[in-house]
Image (cartoon, rainbow, N blue to C red; front, side, top):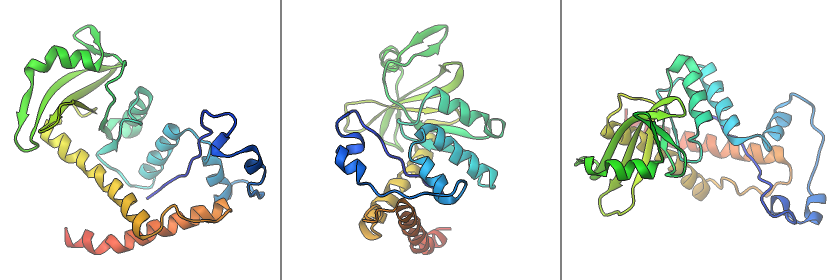
Length: 233
């Protein structure tokens, strides 16, 4: 439905964007008329990824593409992202995504805990899902004022625990895993498009050409997967 390309300056000051000073000077440049698609895409290069992801979601909703959940990996799961999603259509859209077990705090019964502290405190209350073949701990709490449900998960044959967060407080563990598994189709799309449709392999210097090449690859993918989509209905 939508995509955007972004560049990152990186931490190496001697090679910003992974380029030497000489390579930066030799980069292809051209003037673009304001408010044209090319100028809009060029401006997206330096846009904040989280903020731009929200713009893309709101744009989709504005054009009538409404969903039940925003599925995201741990890079997107933050207080500002979750709060912004909950404001869309008066809370009609829920967040479901993996979350880092870092130092962020969750409020449970008046006390703040990190994810690891919560897991250690409630590990003895773990349940087993035969359908998913995993152990899990389910908790209702608050994350920076937002009511959320956490699922701590340890799959069969694994020693480490993973964390899944959702704003849908009525979601069961099996339902959450089933819904979140749909996000894997995005990874499959990128893998197949790169392998068979040369996604991201354009050698053009013009950024407009890069956008066009990516668009064509994705349109090809949609057309090639249509038979599978209709046969599964």
